[in-house]
Amino acid sequence: MEEIDHIAHAVWDLSAALETITTVDGIEHVWTLESDEWQYRTAYILFGSDMFTLLSPTSEESFVTDYLERNGQGLHHIGVTVSDLEAAVVQLTAAGGEVIMEDEVSGVRTEATLHPKSLFGLQLQLIEWADDVGPTARDHIEALRDAADDRI
Image (cartoon, rainbow, N blue to C red):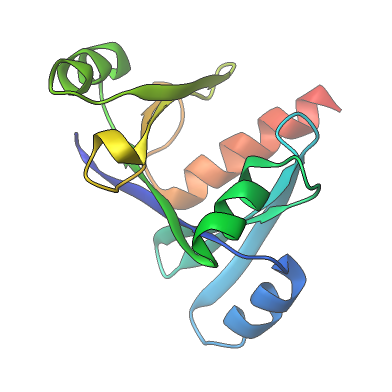
């Protein structure tokens, strides 16, 4: 693993959370993505040069709803950048980690999320960014936004 990519926080009311958090100097709301497939919204925020995301459900069937009902608002997962997703998954599953979700944003990134029960309560999202995506958090957010715009 190379570095923390982002920290994700689950909230019930995304608008209220954004209204509060963006009053602080140095915090910038860059973009919000709504996923019909996964039934949630993600607000991508920069804390200086670091990425932070807020997750909020858009339906009762969302995995975020389930999380919030079980745990309340708070830390949902930590995303980490890896140079070789397949190798990282092999190593973590050999150590007892359980992959619960895999996804790809074509040309941007591939990812695998590990179940928190298999990692001492930590839900870890492993992310391998495409070679042509820049190294900064802003580069990552912009690449995701461009990919979403291309699908519309």
